[in-house]
Image (cartoon, rainbow, N blue to C red; front, side, top):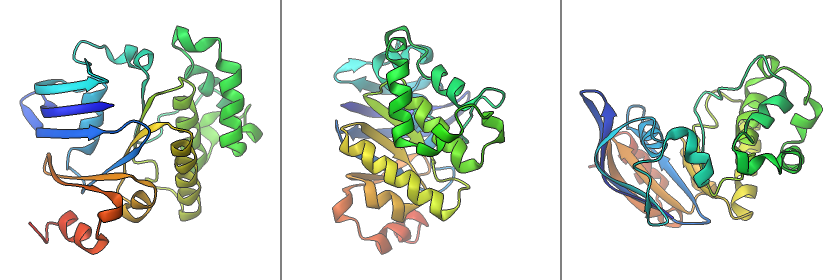
Length: 235
């Protein structure tokens, strides 16, 4: 569905991604793991056009995304749930969700998609009128994910959804990711919790120092070897 070939990207004179090539299959959950500074978040930002690329290509179903503006990506069916939640703190939960339906093509279905979000995240229905800034970290993460789903994405990019959350909330978030995969949503998950990520993934990429150092089906991953590679104990 999404193909990245020989991508180089970074910030000004600082290059972060070095000849990165990945392929994200439709209807599958692909996870990208790796230590801090590996370039995982930069990769998602490059897909969304938030970070400029100096080499390579990014194509969605064969069509280049090079000329797509970030604010038009949702019209292409591509949505990013960013690291750190980034909810609108002074707006209610329901107002946050409504913002996810901003694309004109999604506005007519906003009410239906809000109810779908509440089915996936029952806690949010209880807090629909509550200001997002008063929510717990786990609840704010649910708002960010539900807001992303309001645009009915064909491709959902999720950056570190478990970051800073209690284990019980992490399990709930990953249970919901499993449900979304069953519903046919194509998901690219950046995650440092390797055990949880492997539990839902179809394919795994590992990045280190801006390069892809592992590409395997999740079922073939040896967790011990993965951790050795993660911490550069194995070449």
